Length: 115
Image 1 (tube, rainbow, N blue to C red):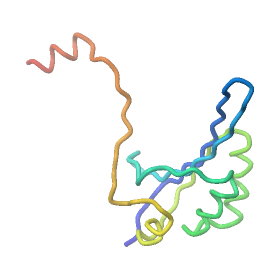
Image 2: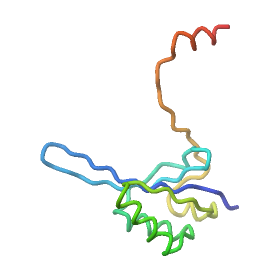
Image 3: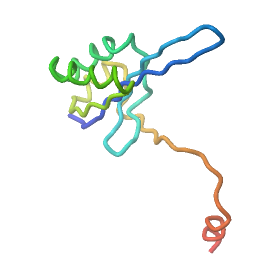
Image 4: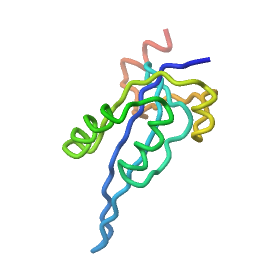
């Protein structure tokens, strides 16, 4: 079975005192925003490219997105992949979590829930 996904390659820089550490992660999302398993850390854009090739992303597309990644520190690549290939890469297509932002409800929202 094939599934539609969006690959998100993201770079994060953390500074602790005088030490600066750069992380690159690769996550897969369903088109509606649900996670497809847990994002994984990879060795730079090259590590992400290696995995994305398994999903059928062409070298030409990867080079196009590399320029955007270097400029913006994040790139989203739509793809269609076989569920088995997604599993072999270390993601779990059956594990679907929704990213939510926790915030306090306003008094009006609380009142409408009681009604």
